[in-house]
Amino acid sequence: MAQVHPSAVVDKTVELGDGVIIGPNCVIEKGTTIGDNTNLMANVVVGPDVKIGKNNQFFPNCSIGGRPQILGMALDAPVGGLIIGDDNTCREQVTIHPSMHADELTKIGNQNFLMIGVHIGHDSILDDKIVLSNYVQVSGHCHIGTGVWLSGMVLMHQFVTVGRWSYAAGLAGLNHDVPPFVIVSGHYPPEVRSINKRGLGRAGLDDDQQKSIFSAFKKLYRNGQPLLEAAKNMADENIDENVREMVDIIINSSKHRFGRYLETFRD
Image (cartoon, rainbow, N blue to C red; front, side, top):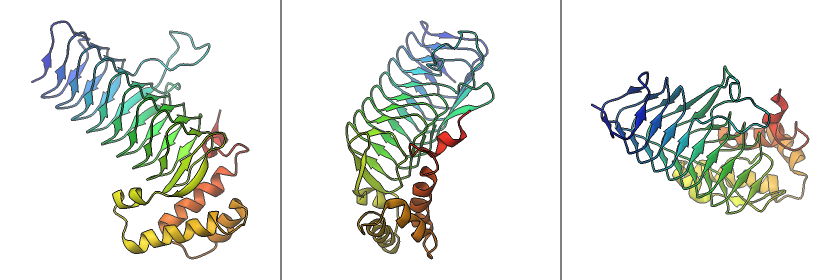
């Protein structure tokens, strides 16, 4: 049975799972569903038609599913949805916006940790086991792969893809796609510095898989060739699936003039 604080405002159409806790002064708008054992602490606001899974923790003052920040969008214009998976933690003042398109979604996966002040813009997709440190700002239409760790105050331009198990140092400004398994720092442009060895371990990759990634990194970034040329040459080789991911994201990002592959699909 759900526990709802007397000061909370919960629309009669909201569906609450077993063990849900709705804290003081929370507001839950129409059509929202909240899965079992999810805890909304004080002053959490959840917009309409948001789908939230099980075992999530929302710390005070989160705003989940509020209207996208789009210049000129009317307050009554239709917007899309927001789906949040299981076992996520959103610390204080996290904001997540639904899609700007009525028939599309912003998606948050499972086991993600969003620290204080993180913002997730409309139409973005977060996979699983992601850590976003304090005040990371993710613009609209971005895709963050499994296991990514963005350190404090990292900024992401619209339509940027960050490959899985990569890491961005604090204050990095990500304005083009980032391959998987790498460490990046700096801004406009950020630079790939090395392989995220700790991420490889967290990903559960064995010694042979890790050696292949290190070898590929040297061929891509340390052999003196232009990056795209090196990636295209490697694409013709017999490479494993992890290296193929690295190569593919480099080649795909080159299809957009600013290195943001997802922007090639922009309306």
